Length: 403
Image (tube, rainbow, N blue to C red; front, side, top):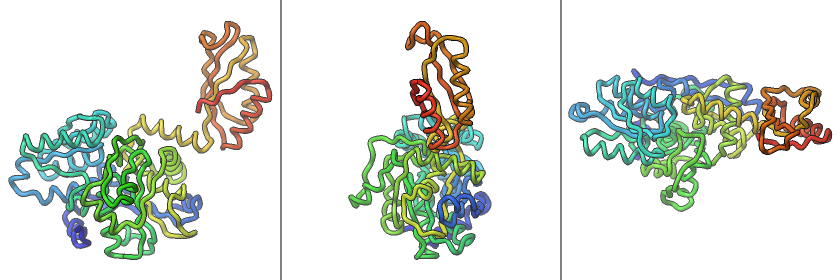
């Protein structure tokens, strides 16, 4: 099984490529949660995510024949970029199979780092099957995203940095997809400080690990559906599963809504931009998915920041909706002069800010003498929303909440 010595050896191999990323105390997030929160900012890593660590360690150990033949892998995006850059830095050709709907920003970044991309399949698992076909057809070495001891050892260097930068750490919180990241981190942390807790977190829409741990064997989901695309795998790897069973203290889940809120607060309160998977550890802390003491020193490992711009807009709006900061309503007005002004006046009197108004007299859903109106509104919390909706309904408006 993976050892502390393996992780320490990996650190020596990857030092010229992977960065030692910052670990920063967050006063704002500590105040929000009651914990002593220190963020491991792996979103500042080269390629924007932790995957460069494991990829570099694996490629550094290739034989000359393997280097000449090249490598192939499958990835939803972050591992793709890590393998592409690590291979390019080593003078090795890399083929990357990515799901057909992988964020375009991650596809383009992979190609910029020197990888040849192949888009195939609906999710990571289908892309992986295609990558194995290429492996056998072209004689390339498969660099697994998580089910590989050398890859896990590379990821585990994060754990070494956490312990050295935050010697008082009591709990480390880590996102889990295939399990390679948490296996490496848990090996490093438990090897140096056995009493430190390691908590794994999965997105509900891709959570296979809790059922697997309960059954004592790996369970695979039929499909995955989550905004945390970086951890959207149907099952954990065989090697990671055994390490998780032995070295991880607890595994919990969070919803996409909770992930969106966590991402929003990280950006707003901590000025830290992460992708969905990167927000998962803080979501677990923020929504108390696991127990912790007041003042406990907790390190959420923010594993990456490669979020597609279009997805970021969607996630932030969802986060604002969930925190009562955004409201979209629909109502019907009599089509007469001043009707819209009367509606807007009620909203203004409640100190709500209007983002946008769509006023449609031609909608087939309303009578000939009526107008369909949709309004996007900035609000100050759930109590403010209830106050505003109450005022509108008291004034006789039939209001439908759209978001």
